[in-house]
Picture 1 (cartoon, one colour):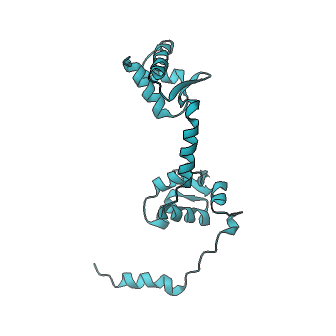
Picture 2: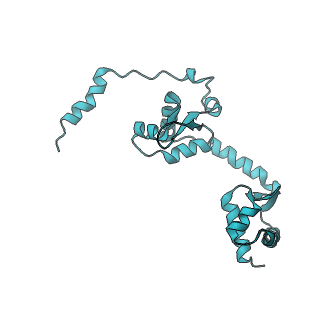
Picture 3: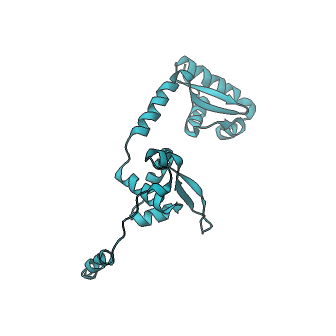
Length: 187
């Protein structure tokens, strides 16, 4: 059975949302009356059933969500465990160290220390639950501040941040060396 355009659009909206969406909002997005929403919802349910799809519609009060059927949960659990067991890249470890030793810090602080864009690394560390938003700073643009989580402590076998290794002290000679190199550079 071919899927009607409105039904296909409904599926796309629910898929991209990843969360429950109010029926009122779905109708608005699809450009139809809320009373007309039952037809594409019924059609989508029938399509998913007919295709033996691992997806189903969940109805939560006045909201609808596209979700994985219960019989496939064990695969999702295995996937989440395999993601957790993946090791962190050197760049991710570097970002974690900057945050752990200086928290709470903003994205711009991390990027200033590292010298490169760190958006995707911060997002990945948030997804893994190693860092979290610690609020917003009272500065222009109200930037988000990040901090490490309990999961970070558990992952690195730390009881608290006080258990982090001490940061090596940089001597006066070490800090002048880059200046000497730069002073010899001519444009």
